[in-house]
Each structure stands twice: as structure tokens, then as C-alpha cells.
Length: 287
Image 1 (cartoon, rainbow, N blue to C red):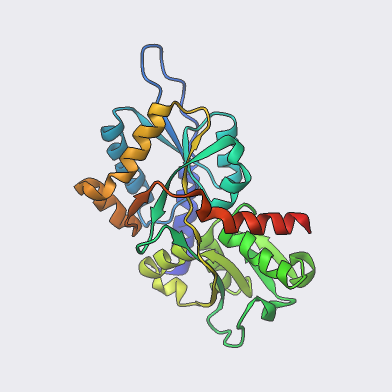
Image 2: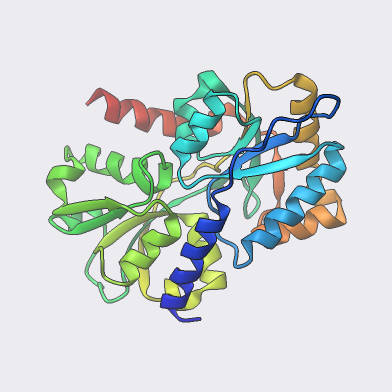
């Protein structure tokens, strides 16, 4: 698939996946479990989301609705307003909004519940060795609430006593990690920061895209984007959802879904996985 067709397909998919909130359940029926997602990145996202919904409904014995939005902020707002029960979120908005959500489970990727931020540049750029080499260049961020796509590079500049607005000639948000890769590959940006897991998935599914960019640096490890639960969700629903996620590797259907995500499974996780994100957040806020 050409990059132009790939981008068009993604855009068309995103338009179809900005789903409305589910209607209230009728009296006598159990309300659906509402799970928030930002756009994922499988080739056939609709088929995967439908299969995952069917899987969870069979384990939870409840209707399940996935509510997809284009940004972390939209998902967080829905969580705050009690319009979602659970969400698969980035560690940065989780740390910022602990008062409205609890840690439910953390995905395990390549044997560990962690991931990295990747600093990338066009493949033709063989000189850049760190973000310090991108002064006065155009830089692409993914989402202002993304750890790997925003907080990490901003913190790197903070340690250099720099701010993005003064350091780069221009910055912009793409609102998706894969679109950061497209922006860098197409030369719209001379650098960008992306979720390493997303890059790895794209490298498997679309090597013609990632071959047009180059990884300059990989960050330290951070807690993998977690599954979270709203503070007001019933304890029995929280327990049932956690049990369903943790049991996926031991189940043939669950294991198949995990393979599509290139994940090993889920663990209950530890709050300390996100301590480094909290430290970076406090540092840039105090500046």
C-alpha cells in the first residue's frame, strides 16, 4: 500500500470511529460497560474492536460499548463526567488525573509492563544524534497529553534549560503517533517523538513507512499506557474487568486478540511504574 493510500485509509477510519456515547439502558436492562479508546493502529481496526467487544461481553456477561475519541483529553473529560467506566489511556493523563480514576491493569510488552519514547528524524538525516541537534528545526508532537509524544521531549529540553517555543522554529501536533511518523517521513517535520510500541507495530505492518524515518534515541523505560477505571465504578465491575483482562493469555480467543496487539497479556500493575512520568510532569510545571 502506498503512503498516500495508507494515510487516506487512516483518515477514513478515524471518521467512522468517532463513536457517539451509548444511549441509556432501558429500565430492567443492565447498562453497558463503557470503555474509552483513542484511535488504535491495526490494519483492520473495526474487526479487532468488534472481536474484543464480543470477547469481553462473553466474559463479563454484560453489554460492552467501545467509545473512541481522537485525543486523550476527550477521553479524560468523559471519565470525569462519569460517561465512561474504563479507558485505555496514556500514563501522563493518568498521572495528571488520579483523582478521577484508578489503575486497573497494565499491558505487558516483550515481557515487561513498560515501553519507550522514540526520537525520530527523516531517514535521509544521518547527522542528528540527539534532540540537541534539532535546534531551529520543525518538530512534530503527537498529543499534548502524551507521555512519549510530548512530555519526554519537552522534559529533555527542560534539562537543557530550553523551551519548545524558543528551541524549535516551529512545532505542531498530529494527534496520533502514526501521523508523527508520516510527518517525519514526508519531510513535514525534521524531528518527532513517538510511542515506541506504536513504532514497532508500524514497522511490522508498514515497513515502507518506517523505512522513511530513523530512530535517533530511545528513552528510559516508562510504565506502559494503562487500563484505568472510573472512581465511581462499582467494585464488582472493576473486579470483573480486571479478571477478564488478566485471564486473556490463558484463553484461546484472548490469546489470539493479544497476538494481534503484539502483547503478552496484562498485569495488575504498580503505581510506581508511573513515578518517572510524575517527576517529569512536576519538573516542567515548576519551571
